[in-house]
Amino acid sequence: MQRRAGIYIHIPFCERKCTYCNFNTTDFFEGLAASYVEAMTREIAYWGENQKRQPTGCTVDTIYFGGGTPSIVDAGHLAKLLEACRAAFAVVKNSEVTIEVNPATLSRMKVDQWLSAGINRASVGIQSFIDRELVALSRTHTAGDARRTIETLREAGFQNISLDLIAGLPEQSLTDWEFNLHEALAIRPEHLSLYMLDLKEGTQLFAQLKRGARPQPDDDVTAEMYRMISRATQAAGYEHYEISNFARFAGSESIEGVSRFRSKHNSKYWSGDPFYGMGCGAHSYDGKARWFNVLRTETYIDRIATDGNAIAERNELSETDRAAEALFMGLRLTEGISLEAFHSEYGVDVIERYGDELPRLADAGLIEIGDGRLILTAAGRLLSNEVFVSFL
Image (tube, rainbow, N blue to C red):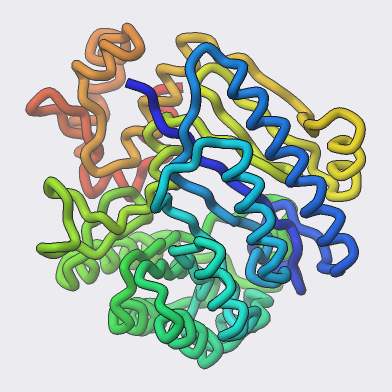
């Protein structure tokens, strides 16, 4: 069966770099944004023509505007990019179209224009409902801005809203996180992404911690925050479907026992479905190879003008690589891996291939094998990186 693809559109522009961010971003200038959007329409057309030449066609059912801050650019730019996608690819009617939103970078008029263009899901980067934490993260909004942003989205008609929050920040107490979690759940969004802080070398926060300007996060406190997330979201009626992701789940909000508010686009990454990344630094995967674009915005624009694409590096995956990737990505999902389906797809008997590692992980209480599936336990989700390294 042909897998439907997703399209990721990278909007790199930001007002200011957050202290924890290691994404590919640049300062926002309207002139540069206009040139960048024009280049992306050409790249979209390039890949649309490329996939039409493949033996099997490609349909698209998710489009995702990420960044950076997609909500900072003119709504007309986003509408133009969506039209380019529909012209170049067979985009399924009622596809999931997501925009990442930074609070205080939108107006009611802009939100109405998003809806008119076909954007139907908003992922709001709140990160915290505590103003001092937002200041320490170098966010450009307040907790009040976040609440007003959600109100604006709801009043305009958005019926699928996701909220992002970060746990395990330096100096963040269990009481602080409990407050953040309570505020998020009280809003009753359709989806929650509740991340544990992932410190990346090269970020401002990493440098602050290294020189002792801020205290290191406490691992035991962070672990309890994760357990708190699991308890609170379950009690509030959310499906914990991926390590850091939760979808509202009740009656009409489920299809065949699965919440209809799962992120369809992000699920492609975990399920091994193909996706095309458009824009500077964007990554792509077609089931056989991965590639990514040049990072610098201006270089990307020049490359598109001369070559039609802006690939910086392409890596063909061996069958072993594909199987290993599919295993640890699939384990991120609560339902884990079907051993029979995995063997059929990749020709790998997981029990046989990883027989030396599986008993150790099971004895440690990190995985379970039963009913033909391999899954992470609650403890395994907390210590997932230690599990995944066993399969590399």
